Image 1 (cartoon, rainbow, N blue to C red):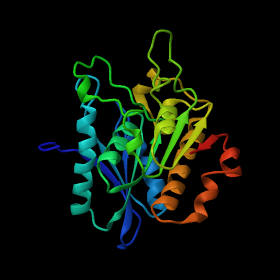
Image 2 (cartoon, rainbow, N blue to C red):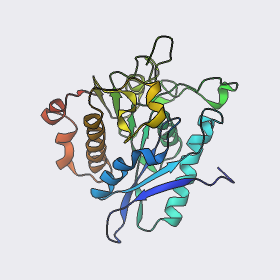
Image 3 (cartoon, one colour):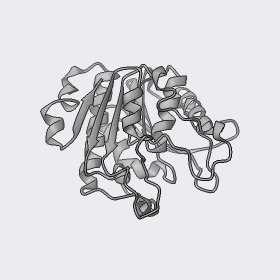
Length: 260
């Protein structure tokens, strides 16, 4: 938004040729730095990866309306200031709240051509006093999302970390609702034994708030390769990557996949 300055990591492949851009948005109480491995993997496959840190938190949460608008502002900056961005091939990834953020942005900004939600969460943060600033997107707005979309769900995300605690990705607010209500071609992958924060390199203090998965490194690797394959197919039109999106390779990773 106007007057805000954000820190961001940029990972890019070698060379000066125009490259597709993928923006990756972190979850609530997290930072872009905690997804550096994902950014490096995208760059190693020819994408410019842009990982901003939104700069808010529990005591100063930004509205979800503002966060979606910020994505468009970040894309404006990237097109103007990052050399080699192919503005006709832009994708977006978001984890947790960031998943909602990029999905709402994609509904509103036609520059985003494909989107991936890593265990996306529709819920508002605690102690919200202005519900209009945190509108529900799934299912209410999902019919407007007509671009290709993939959702990767953590099977343990709907479980509370301890009795009485809210789940990090509650039933009715998570990947399943996004997938069931999206208006375009969609893929859903569930990792039954993954935790909500397994998609970060290191979840830090936030780890205490969510159930941990059995093998975070495996969940993280699945998210990396699935997003790379998804953007290879849906931004670059390279169907050689489709086996990584459906069939035996997905099943071998232990994921339960669906398509609609």
